[in-house]
Image (cartoon, rainbow, N blue to C red; front, side):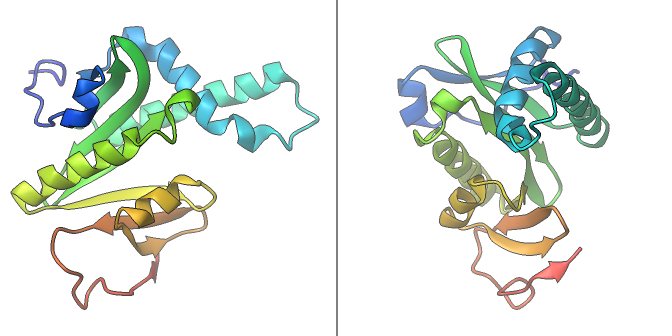
Length: 187
């Protein structure tokens, strides 16, 4: 059974469904949209590179997109790779790896015109509800410069480790215990 044929365990939040939002498994036909989405999340990082032409920036982002996609497919191949749509128009992506003890948000991203509207919050809260129902934590990693980390903290994610680039964060339906409370490890 392929990921596209597997039953989808995630229920779209009612408030988003009422606005015409749905999730569907991505296909190869989505690659142009996924690249556009990727560029929208990375373009500002390249602004300081004034010596690069737009074509050079696009070429660099294309190679980075391919590397990221290969990494996701190789390391999270059993994940749900879903396209977030409103009335059949792609708005973003949600990749979730349902592991033994955690729901790992591999990636969540929206096009700029959909950001700041509560869509990401509603999706993450729905994942919390799923996790709560099966007694699992939810984890995510976020680049230290990414403004989305404020959203994750507001929703209750806590750092448990870091490296030079990322904060590794978790949310638990259980109150923090001594193994997590206030602990920050270097990874």
